[in-house]
Every structure is written in C-alpha cells, then in structure tokens.
Image 1 (cartoon, rainbow, N blue to C red):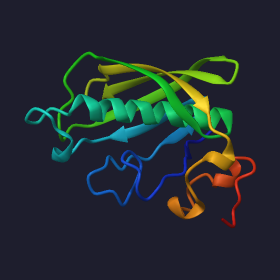
Image 2 (spheres, rainbow, N blue to C red):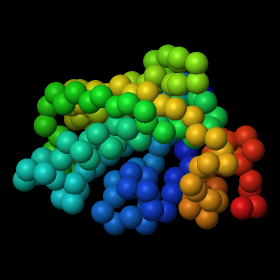
Image 3 (cartoon, rainbow, N blue to C red):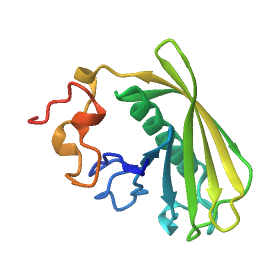
Image 4 (cartoon, rainbow, N blue to C red):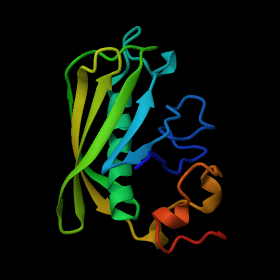
Length: 166
C-alpha cells in the first residue's frame, strides 16, 4: 500500500499551509500508521535553537488526531495528552512524527506517537493520547477551510457524510 496524503487546511497551526508561524505539516497514512516530516524553524524555538516543548506537544497531538480520524473515519478531539521529552529538538534539523492507534475504549481512540530525529533515528519525544469523536455536524470547519489538493484523500472519502458542496 502506498502512502496516502491526508487533507490539510489553510489556517491550522500544525497543518495550515497559509499560516506563516505554523508548522505547515502534511500527514500521510500507511498500514495503520500516520506520519509527517518536520523541520522546525526559528519561529518555533523556546531557548535559542531549541524547539519549544509546546510546539512539540502540538505536533504530537496532531499526528495522533490524524491517526484516530483516519482509522475512525470521523474527526476527533483530544481528551488527554501525555508527552515525554527525551532529547532536545533543534531548529533546522529533520524529524519524523509517527503515530498509531494503541487501542479503543468504546468510542475513544487510544493513540501513541513518537518524534524521531531523521539523522540517527533516535527518539526525541513520545506521546500518548485519548481522542473523543466529534459528530460531523459539530465540526467547526467547512469545505473552504481545506486546501483543494488532487493528491490528497478527498474529505468525502475520509468522512462519510461530509458534504462536498459545502
């Protein structure tokens, strides 16, 4: 199975391509996993040349959101997020976020994620999360919030019941 580019937005802090201060990540699904490549910029630092822990947490949260949403075929919200920082994450270096579903408790997805340095495949941070489903009519997004990209999975394929003409 090839990698599937997941939908992305204009303004989201993590996946928004038009958000100049954001991470502008693109997420791909394959074999029950979701991943994204990440090269932090100076806007993402806390200490000089070190990425702020909140930015790392946001990226881990988003990759887990996407694995829950892709596997569950609806959008989810974070109910709980736990992050363990193991090694500094440097501005200008290449990293990869990887997530998977660890289990389910009724409607809640239990997820796990890692942030790995591409240079040596070392684990810089890990996360676990619990994600709760959002009814489609309560998702505060419209079709125009998403970038039209013919390479990305159509929203209608990701979210059964999504209105293509909205």
